[in-house]
Image 1: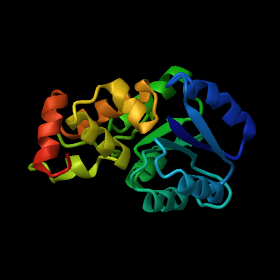
Image 2: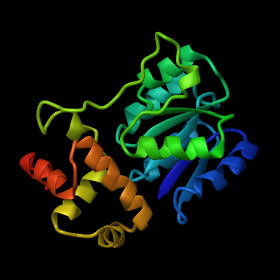
Image 3: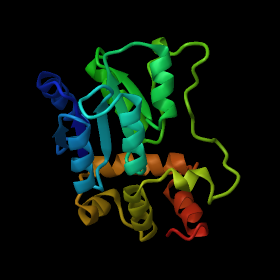
Length: 214
């Protein structure tokens, strides 16, 4: 599992890395110190599983930096880390395409839970930072067709997982084929089931096959 951790404060990065290790024993953390290095590293690792970006770093201007990252790498789940606690900022970050907003003051358990939610296709924002006028985007429960928002929300890695599931592979076999850990595969499978509104692997394959993806 590869995660980009972009923050210009070394001490903060060192503090977050042990938390990320709780996601997967073999997680690989790629570190960036500003927006330019975050773009460069991500371009070199297009199959990255997740990006965690500080909102305010050198080489970018807050929301503009997030918008540019999302424009360049639309398939990589993105979570913003920020020390600010303004509801308007949360709304702007989510509107810019981030799938999560985590306060730097959050407890390790909250960070892990938020990442699991985002990796499963959900959107996370601290409830106490949401104003009455701030809404959190959610995935549609019953999309109109298999070619609609459900399939477009899948990343390339998740599409690979769907195709291998269609071949009858177990999580362990998929992990070996894609050079991932079994824990990472489980996260992707959960994301696939949620995105396709499928109750199980068989139903997910049927939806994908109907759309010509498996």
